[in-house]
Length: 232
Image: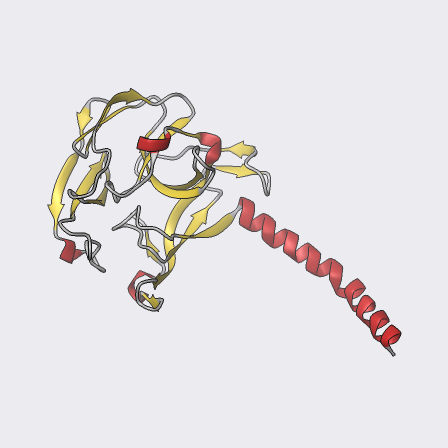
């Protein structure tokens, strides 16, 4: 009886094993080289991206890679200033989500959380935290938000005066094939200020949309207003 059951089980595996294996390989290759989503566990990109957001990552935005590797088959562009990208940290290979602030060849400096690119200061405008839903400053003391004009890309940044952070650095030039990344939550982000420039081949793809958003501090309540919303 047991032998008969074993034979039946092996026959099922023979019939379905190959199709299932092929399907897994195809699905894995698609996720590795074409598109994926990334769960955001921290607030380093607040108020743009919140903890519990799941963002869609277009891995074909800049190039085509060999599935399951970072080797490029073809390239048709590079990240542009202001775009949000997913990349592997040069420090510990962790997958991170940050905004591209500096491009290859740029000269960049930071003075009291104000960016200077190629010698020109960026424009900043005050905005009310109440205009951002949910309020990003909740529980963060005297935090506030500004609208940063990243040379044509306007987006919100968040500042925490009471938090220790690297708010200034002298002018540096970004080497060829490298990028300078920063989180929108400027005083609560481990980014290129700490781990340095990011090589082009470490960039996975461009983050485009919030697909799903769950409030991890409120029993994973869905934030319906953030579902399928475009990232600025």
